[in-house]
Amino acid sequence: MGDWNSDTAEWYAENYGDYPTNRLAVDELDLLRDAIIVDIGCGTGSALRHASSRVSDGLIIGIDPVSRMIEIAREQTVDHPGSDRIEYRQGTAEKIPIEDDSSDFVFAFDSLDHWGDKEKGFGEIHRILRPDGKLVIVKDGSVPGASTACKALVDEIQKFNFNVLNQQQVSAEGVTFTMWTCVAV
Ligand SMILES: C[S@@+](CC[C@H](N)C(=O)[O-])C[C@H]1O[C@@H](n2cnc3c(N)ncnc32)[C@H](O)[C@@H]1O
Image (tube, rainbow, N blue to C red; front, side):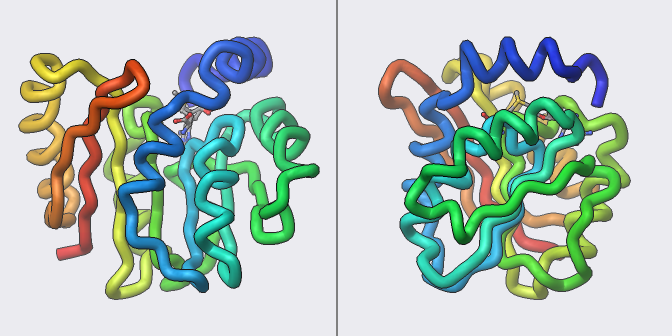
């Protein structure tokens, strides 16, 4: 988990806790009402809360290694209308506390760069995704910066046995980010 700890969790929650990429990226996705979604490196749980109104009969599970981050996510979720469909579990991308073949979507929103071991992380995602499940990666970045980063990331995604179904860049509300929707090869 690199430099992430209680202090950085507080700092992140204060400055970026509801960063617009979370809602904007979720809005782009075709989420079924009964979807099971796992958000790896969920931070304060912003993406989960946004997804919960669309997933009225499903379950959204946030995973983060930092116990203080999980506490903050729970505090921010307890009074949310979708809280009955949201769970948080402490864990890492490299060891995801989720059963095999259980997930329709796995989100990695601005979390990939923080994983200690990408090979293990992608391996874990292969393990928990259902055969038709989708991995959605989001990376914050300006348009010129994103284009170099895009190619490197697509190479990395393919190296770990995922195909990119869709790559899109979104600019709104003062942020620009790229998102990749991927399926297992
Ligand atoms: C930049 S924040 C992004 C949070 C949230 N997804 C968002 O977009 O607002 C990165 C998150 O990744 C988490 N993280 C750090 N190491 C990780 C690991 N090995 N596996 C999964 N998440 C990790 C951090 O604790 C932090 O919450």
